[in-house]
Length: 305
View 1 (tube, one colour):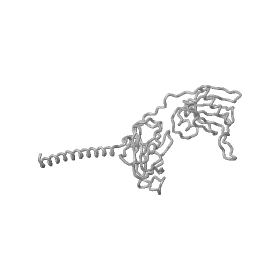
View 2 (view 1 turned 90 degrees about the vertical axis):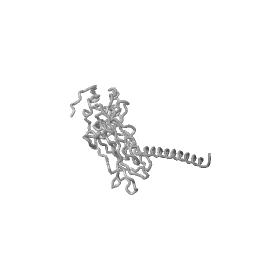
View 3 (view 1 turned 135 degrees about the vertical axis):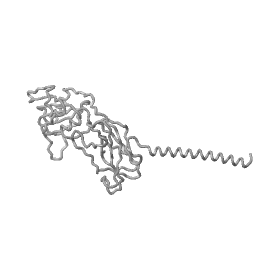
């Protein structure tokens, strides 16, 4: 092989190598573009700030973490709650409350999140959400240090994620014995200074409804619970008090008890007897003066209002 043939052979090899390298670069570039442009599951933001959901569908009554990824290079101010919208009649309808109680999401309050950081923001799916397709929206903006906490202005943006909501299922009701419920109530009454209460009743429902009926407080958990009401003369002598303060007193103790574990999860002392019938059938565990006590296992519940 003379020098011209050797040069031609080397040039042909060089072209083949160059073609292979170019093809490899093209493949890598295409793969990088595919990865960079792929939408994260449950998010419509292809890059930068995005929302991540572990699953595409959840059941009403769940509280789930939604991960907000700040993939930008700057600190952001993110919202503290989601705007939850249900698809209806070709559009989106915002969910602003539950059980007739207005619970709007504050759109102007925010917390900082560093660049490159992840944060879990709790999403509460109310038990009365209709099954269907939903969209959640979280507001954010680049934070410049002078307006931390104030999520307003022209730089505010939104990031979305979609999910499906399944019908709420409370499940089979666990059952505590009437004897155990009565023992819990009598122990609470005795601890509050009246070992001879004149009335003890209970009804069963969700923990959310039990607290709503007992005190008006909103506890976003929907496990089976008992609401126990106790009438007597009570004082919270074991409660921590400021120096010289008088212990709270009242004529009614309310207890919310987890129906599966028998643990008291919530309680209160007031002068208002709760409308147990709003929760469900009422059982009277003790009635009358202590000297003439009558225990009735299943008294008829008054009609629902």
